Image (cartoon, rainbow, N blue to C red; front, side, top):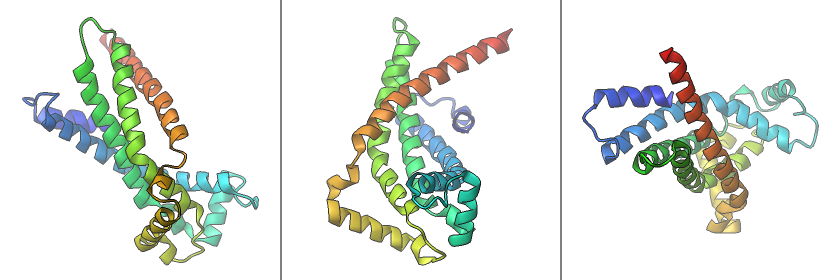
Length: 212
């Protein structure tokens, strides 16, 4: 989705320099739209994943059973619980990651530098930045999704999210919002460069296949 949206906007503004702030804005906007769409689709599965990981009763043992339990205990609207945080997190992750990666790749690219090295440098920076800015949202999303609403609309309100956030800050301080950040950042630094290098490699391979 990002590539389609990004290409569409850049074709509309072909005169813009790809290293300019205008180009960065287009990339960030494209990432915002793509991540918004993806987070809506993925939220129910994130909720089920959190419930399965933290389950101590056996009611969330399988995917099908998890969906049934959520529908029976909390109502199927529970599947959208945390969607606002998921959207915010997804927007932050993808906007920062995609925009910084695309921009850094353009800046770091040289004729005498291998493309894989350029990709590794750009993706390392973008992954670390995305992890830093998104982690507090990821932490709050996990806490919020793990809390059963039991049919209460109040438990799914934005006011309740703010209450949970205030409780977390009061209990652990602002440093507590980055509790467990190092494993998260390490995962991002391993995942990001691997993902982008494989993406670039696959993209070049398919481009060559189309030319035959």
